[in-house]
Amino acid sequence: MAGADILTGRTIDGPANSRQRGGLLTSCDAFFVQAISAAAAILLAIEIVVLFVGIVARYVFHHPLVWTDEFNSIVFLWLGTLGSAIALRRWEHMRMTTFVSMLPASWQTYLSGFALAVVIVFLALLLPPSFEHVQTEAGVISPSLEISLFWRAAAMPVGIGLMIIAALFRLRLLPAKVALVSLAATIIAAGILALLQSTLLELDQANLAIFFLIGVPLMVFAGIPIAFAFSTATFGYLILGTYVPPSILVARLDAGMSQLLLLAIPTFVFLGLLIEMTGMAQRMIAFLSNLLGHVRGGLQYVLVAAMYLVSGISGSKAADMAAIAPALFPEMEKLGNDRAEMTALLAATGAQTETVPPSLILIAVGSVTGLSIASLFTAGLLPAALLGAMLCVFIWFRTRRATLSRTASVDRSALMTSLLLALPAIALPFVIRSAVVEGVATATEVSTIGVVYTMIVGLVLYRQFDWRRLYPMLVSTASLSGAILFVTGAATAMAWAITQSGFSQTLAEAIEAVPGGTPSFMALSILLFAVLGSVLEGLPAIVLFGPLMFPIAQELGINEIYYAIVSILAMSLGLFTPPFGVGFYITCAIGGADPNRAMRHLWPYLAILTVGVIIIALVPWLSIGLIQ
Image: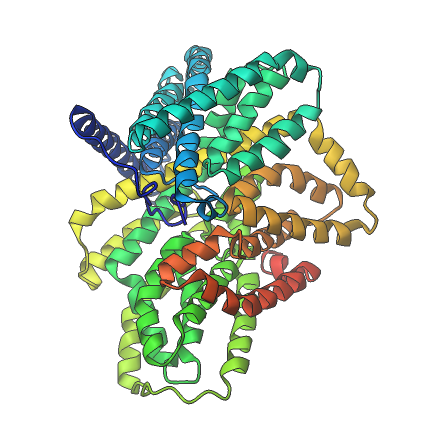
């Protein structure tokens, strides 16, 4: 798969014929990357420390620090824009590359250049409005810190400028002819659209179809990063099809990227990396292997259970799979398991555990819909457990006549030893959830308790802690978080533009006119989110359509927590469904399996998960029973 993906954080260079040009530019490129990486790592470390200090001040000393929310909001926006620039230079922004990868290498080269050219031209056009946004905010004084919001709003033009530089450095890796042709074609296309402005203004809501139903899919399928496809289409719609000033887009990006609830994303991502570094995930897997490894299909049960437990800690799906596959797959292969089949099961568990807290999707849903993240965390446990049990039943049915495992059962003392070693890791999800439920920390802050807990366990109990890895982990977290936050901001801006156009009301009326009432709406929602999860991936699908669909669900009297869980699970089915679901290809890359072979083994698992999602949709208690 070409490009790179937000879920893996892996960078895949452009076409084979691209070449890096040496000299002064190369040195400037290296310095640029080092400088913004260091700044982002420092900001992330500051955020973690301030969040934890805030918990201690409030809960231990009963003296809340009133300034922390404002301070964190400022630092968080700067972290998001710097992280976005790092992700753009690394080409780690989320992309849809299914169709691009099918084309000849020469076409792929030009599409890579075109994608970068669109990003550069869009950012260059957005830069002047970002200065207008700063001027608007500069006159406002923050109530707690009593400083001008200039220091916060300045993150937008600085971040946009850094992203332009990052994209230009990335573009220079392509052949000069490709870079020049791509930039020229993009500028000409932008000029033609500008000439059509008067015509487009007369089309009114028809512009929604032009920019969002035609423009967005074309850009996404051409391999343009999804965040930039969303924001470019929104920018074009606002300046060509409406009289709304473009600085509004900057304001919506700012608001979407800096929601304090989203602050949990970088801290949970960093927590996931810490868990891998300290060996906590490996010790959990070792215990489960000792417990079940000797029974028929035992390690397959271990895979399902391990994904559930690890998902309850790291919050990052790729981190979950990357921690489990290297530990389990070699042993499973020794017992005769096919790697393609193991990868298919790994993909199925990825879809199954999407609602296990602290899922980043749950946090995103809470941020865009205003739902309680603590309630979402609780509601997601039982549905994921049900789907896991259904997978285990299928594993039992498929392996019931298999030859008994050649792995000898572990004696009780060894089993108890592995349990004792795994207990600190197994306890972490309960520590995190208890801290939220008992009011020790908010859902935004609680991950820092996990970070401190994991560091203590790694340093004191496991004695497995590599200080040299902390800086690269902070930079990787900043890059991944920046990509997530930018797509969240872009989807938020796009959803706002669609809502302001009146389309959401039209959509609500159309859905309400569909016969069948609530059952029909739920069926349409499952289908919609499954398709969107396949094409757009989970996060942008939820952030974009959550504000449109959740009010309709509320009008129909549907419990919003229940609706959120069903929507997320439907989205996860699409995310891991070939041929479009990028989650499936990520799993194949992590599992080291041929996608074509893994695909054949995946369909029965997806069928079971589909039945499970339908059951969860038919029985609301499975989602909300634990919070009533």
